[in-house]
Image (cartoon, rainbow, N blue to C red):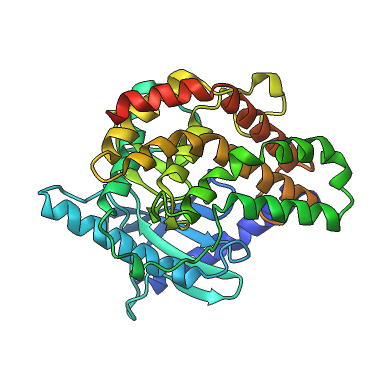
Length: 379
């Protein structure tokens, strides 16, 4: 069965479950409509429009991929604590958190999730009206706003009690560990694909001093562990359709202890690439310095009040590190037979891996310029 046919069958089954899921969260309705949202590689996401007694309401319903997220309950407990902390912080500053921080529905037992069975773990949150996500950053001003929003996300959580945050995804951004996983997968060669990436493996090993540096700084205590988003792609920010303002950070599954450089680096890795992250023509792949500067102009000033000088200096290193790391993750999934990321064709993960490796190498070539830009905004 082709991937697209299998996906259509799966989605049809999810549609049938949605009314039952909605009722678990106390929602009643006379009619409903479902729209599949296709952003993201992991979870299945739906926008649901409900009509009851002439009242229209919209929610986001998500089925969490429990193969990827092995501790979904811990993830939802983290999300509950983090969103509440941000909400309290905004209210204390006289800011209205409505639509600015995700609001998840809770069931009668107080949980913000519905664990239907081992394969079906659901959650529901309020849809933010007049919002949209973009997969590509085209307007530098909007990207600057997104950078500021991700920076404020960290700033709101800079005083979060770390002991209350569960590490639901250990080593999620431990780049040396990710590389080790890839190299081991190549040795196992479960589906006979390792021979296709010998050149990529050689390039990754050649640049170990780059992608291994952040974890070395953390181990030496030179940069601190913080509450980080860890998946700061441009499409994880809701943008106001009318004003272009970044209004809300979404997809909080990966909120765990991490480094500030991870969030900065992953954001520019995604938003400042001159091509989509699965573009197979590597001649189109490079770092757009203008978009990099736009994101830095928003993110760095928002973090300056709580970040140390060492952290400020480490931010640029996050860019090639995250690109190298994602290259390793895509290539590992390809070698393992595409078990983690959603794919649309047989070589999708291979193309993604090569794309991110090309981007990382371009970032290394532009290293001096990245540092120069960052230091302007860190003053």
